Image (cartoon, rainbow, N blue to C red; front, top):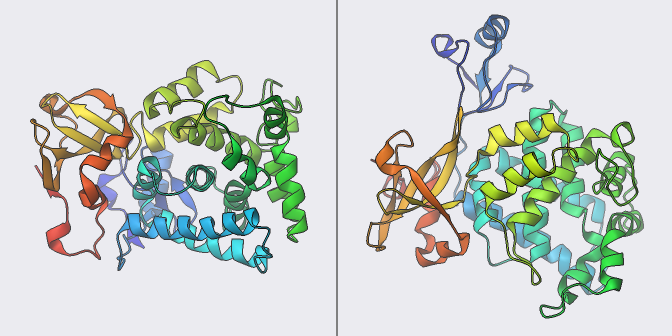
Length: 373
């Protein structure tokens, strides 16, 4: 790990990377405020950041590889194939997932935000798992506890994979389908038990991920009856569901989804967990397509520490809408490049694979690195 320069650590400072101690314990999540002189002293004495990892493939390619593997599990369940040792398969998936997401969390979220190739089940589960991975880190979870939560996120809809394929575009949900959805936590737990998974935290997190602090959830549990992992998965499940279109409803733009969670539903969710999510993603999470004051089309690459509504944006077209050969990063502090409108993420299809270069890693060739303007 790389030591954080002591000269950069001051009260009021926000970093665009996570800060850990030498044992890998999170001291400060990216974007969060260095709040006091004692905290300054701790970070100066113990603060490290993790170096970026070089990869042979793009960050988008890496997260798509995980999505492909989850798709195989989905097909095994739909076709009622044995699928081998499920506990080991999921553990291996989670191990690789954590490695990829920790290497570049912004690229992982953006990939799923813009994803059109995989099924709703796969994209929804993967996005929920990315959010859980980040929030578990913010809450100081151990490696094992974090893996349990991510496992729950990736498998929380196992019990209704078949229903995801049955939903009718014209009529919406039938009463029977609605009833199954209300029972899908229990159905997923039953299926996982059949697969030999008996971890109580993993299973209880899935069982209670539709329970809310105000008692409005499926079983009416409240406050202390809901463990923190289930509170985290509830938020991750909600934001992921709102960002994905369904046959019976349109998607909600990320800024609107976050506002709804914080303003309309704050009595449902743990406010401290919501705040951690906001500081991590900002109002325009990675993958949000936007129109700038310059008339250029761009994509939010990462949150700007301390500025929830001013992400770093890479432009993908010129003012006349012509796609660029390589993305160009815009300064979020420059009013000429202010965001004037959020756009449908499906518009990303117009610019092709150049969008992947917005999250280029050191392992990619210099010619494919995003230029800075």
